[in-house]
Length: 242
Image 1 (tube, rainbow, N blue to C red):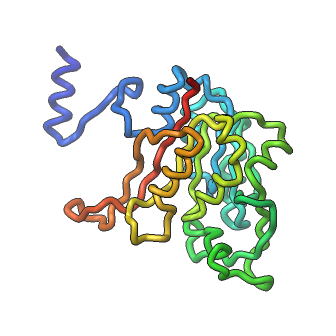
Image 2 (cartoon, rainbow, N blue to C red):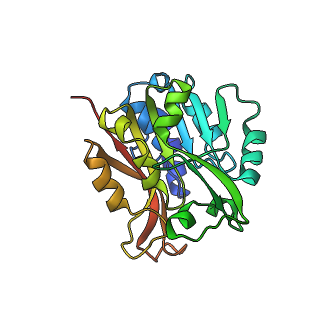
């Protein structure tokens, strides 16, 4: 009775609360993934690709108590902030590294805001041998081979429009379903090229038996609540073994 009264009082104030274990699917991808796998302790390897300054790391450390978390950020300024932020987390390893469909290096001009850093300029030809930062690029598969990693429970990519190239560097792992869950930043606007197209990512992953699960962290075209449509979000995919 007391819980009911508290719930009603909170709702009258314009809020709603959920016990984390019973929160609706679609609010938090980390807790949803843990729920789908039966327990957060079942996640052992998490890749945070495009970690920037480590905004996701603290949440992953709390959500996955047994996971080794690999954080990747290729640009020097953001990487230094990432290292400082995770210095007290024994289960987090950091790498100044980008991922793509081939191993290579490229000079990329950093953006004014670190959260907007991207390797998209390399795809468009807007990079040169002079200036910018020298970025080391590997495929996910080559990195995993070097580190003796055979399976990834959650692969999160936030690379400002470069996510599909990251996935193309893991084709053999995708084909054998050695990546269980994939969370990629994607746009649902067909006329928008800043973020990777949700439809292109969905089509690509479907070739390897991955299915779309849900959308998270919705960002709309306008910050006003009366101005849809949905601009971009994080899309979760999975491949279940039959």
